[in-house]
Image (cartoon, rainbow, N blue to C red; front, side):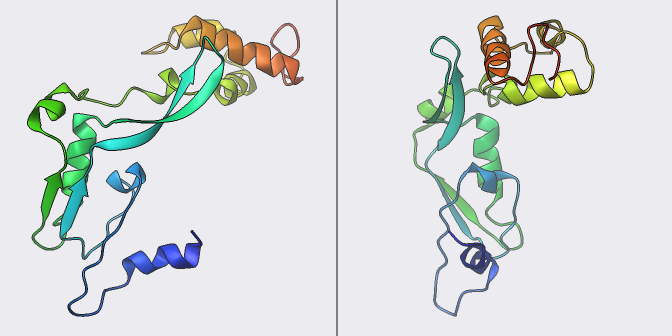
Length: 160
């Protein structure tokens, strides 16, 4: 969708017209649309995940976290009374993870590996093992190997 069309979301609708916005999970935290009165939450989001075994990133629909559900509920009634309708039963909500899995555990690591090297933080794998939540060793190995193949790193993991 063109930027000019996206900006229309912030225009006040005509009297008697109800604005319906279908948004990605970016709307959970990034924007406030003043005239949102109702939020309909399907409980799903497309999330990037990384399959280290097959060395492939994927964009898959998945259930949101409890924090995301609260954020979505908070989109309604920011500047006027509002309501949120969740399109899933309580037992599904109760099974949601409290928080979304950190990005370092679910996305390819090539860019992060390059940042580690450009900041001169030492060995990529040693640095990442000290993270609060370390990615799989195989994911790190895949990223480093890919960067060597494309010539971004040499055999000693130095930037080229």
